[in-house]
Image (cartoon, rainbow, N blue to C red; front, side):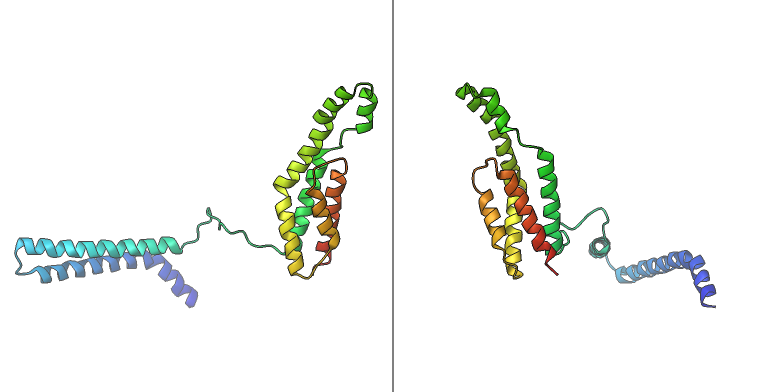
Length: 201
């Protein structure tokens, strides 16, 4: 019975809405006629203008309220959903490992020395252009993309009672000018952060 009534309502609800709107409009028109009966034309014009402004305001407010209450699938919140500290640590470690892998292998310093050992000036020039440049770029990528996140996550670990002097030492080591051990220090930081993430609940 309930399903039948629901089906009947779905069939006629459009007509009911139209009839209701017509009835309301007719009643409003008659009401305006009663209110303006006996008034001069300019008094009627002023009264109709006031009614029109009120009706326009009411319709606008209703439409805006409805639009604001509807979710917009094409608009996402400017504030991302906060993930757990453990997940953010693992995410940083994954991204950091990918970055280290993309940098490849450091140019061979011994091979370069063997090639230019008889000319110190040429060796210095090639060292600066090939090896020191590689170290500088590795360091710059860490500072630009990972350093602040790593330090902030370290602070969060302290707030969660996870204290690890090795992480502090690794972060401090990476603040120094880059050299041949910079890649190893980056890998050490990744290992220490990954271990800290693994012990979090």
